[in-house]
Image (cartoon, rainbow, N blue to C red; front, side, top):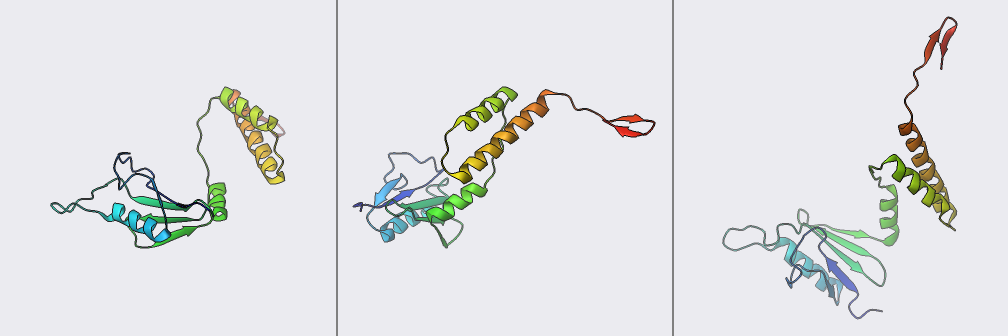
Length: 156
């Protein structure tokens, strides 16, 4: 067990690392971590009521012993809860848009195929992704073939 198991961070805030309030830090309890996060997300200047930390829209609290996460957003009073399994499912369902050259795609497919993977599901995903990369790379490299019309019908 960690003495300060809760890690409080503000992803994408770009806050000054020296700022004692908005920097990522440890907390002794979940209550303290939630309090710290709310102070940063909802703190306003007295004079003009603008946000003190305008880029700190999200706070993520992670229990380093269990991997559980609590997510607070400035635009909501709700606290989202996430287990490591829920996070893995979310990440697995996300898709990426990549822009690779044909050479990069072929090299990536080769590296993926040569990796040693012991998990059957992961190995299947790697084979599928490598196959898709190779297919796309091969299609980009050659011109499209238009079907020709013959007297008996269409022929490719």
